[in-house]
Length: 187
Image (cartoon, rainbow, N blue to C red; front, side, top):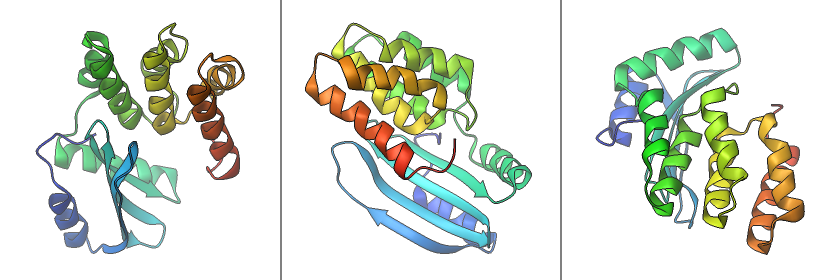
């Protein structure tokens, strides 16, 4: 996750100085989700992605590559170059959230910042939200799971989809599970 003062223009400058060309730019105004997304191709199979999310306002930069080692190397460079928000800070924000709105924002940011492979520190907080008695916390957990997209969250989402007292949360959880099954790359 990017610090609040890093802009898309700064990410674009790095990508373009690295020989990248913009291959995607999308903007939208959804109630929830990505409001700005840009992808630069450095070379075939190696990309830099920028996104800004709503409602948290969190922005991220990430690498994708056909080769996992290349992806990890570029990810490390991006973390260092942009001084991305560290895991401890992201998780501490979830732990200290005092209101449902603060928790929603913190959990979405945690979902965005979560590593590609399931991490127990992140997963514990997302699971706790998915299993909460409070509907706002469960919804925040669904939002966080949208970005973390780990298979170990599926049973908790399935439980919400099947049994949540709120139809909206049942639909959100089922929609996410359906999307992952239909659209997402293998997890």
